[in-house]
Length: 369
Image 1 (cartoon, rainbow, N blue to C red):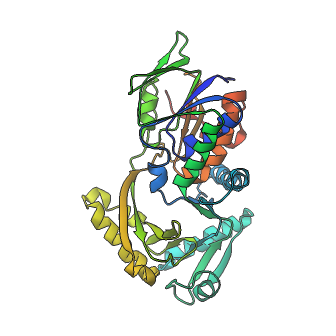
Image 2 (image 1 turned 180 degrees about the vertical axis):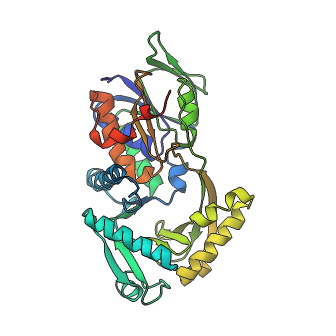
Image 3 (image 1 turned 90 degrees about the horizontal axis):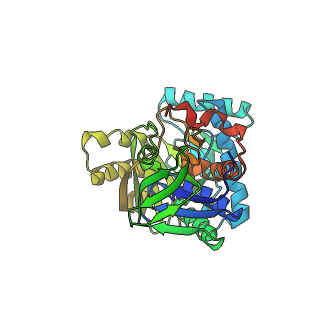
């Protein structure tokens, strides 16, 4: 259904900012609503890796992520790449034969799907790409040259700034208490915790970990997974690596000129044991300095256990919910990769009713209301 009036975007992480930017630049009246400050929630505590190599479980999901990578390149051209866009590629290797074999099988599959990939030895990678790595000389290392990492908070700041310049309104530090509907169930109002009430024609639920709660405000059940993840930032005098990488037991990427981000699924598994974030951070740091010895002198600057916004089946929930006219969802893990493409496609759907085939497998109606 075409809806082109006032749109409230709930949640201003990478998804909400992307939707709001696309709407505002096309002349829509947009209100951006965030409980905190834009880009400082899950977006700021994410590994922020732009890729499709880790999305092969379903070919349509892979294609959506490839489109997300292309949308990032287009966005960098539109708003400028400085401070947020780092298309330096991605490295991956393993220290267990079974895991290594799987990495190589995935690389072969992706090459067959025309996804650029190169397999080198550890010695070649140290010589040509990352001299600081402690990777065995003969270890096969997979390099995906078209992948990137993103400084999510900087990107959100850029998008929000341009959206506001185009006429959007930003409401920070307030939450949505109520979404009002009229007699036919269409969205008509949004009540905020600051006491204000907005007349709207559409609402976009981009609330990340709070998306199920926001869905409940229109009496919709959006099932979500509970998958917390821990991310640690290290401060260092000089960042010793240029690329995002999945090394054995640890993920490492730069985070600007004096910081590195660490994550590990293995350490995530310790969250439910009751381990303190400081203990998890030390575990990540120990693993990181085995891969990049120069990180041994780095200082742990901050750690956050973030709750990933993952619908129950693991795939995005994007688009209109037919039973609630004017209500749209933009909820997914991999928001960094998918934000720009989802922002473009969802804005087109809100403003012109266009349902893009890229989203056919990821429509909200697959979850019963």
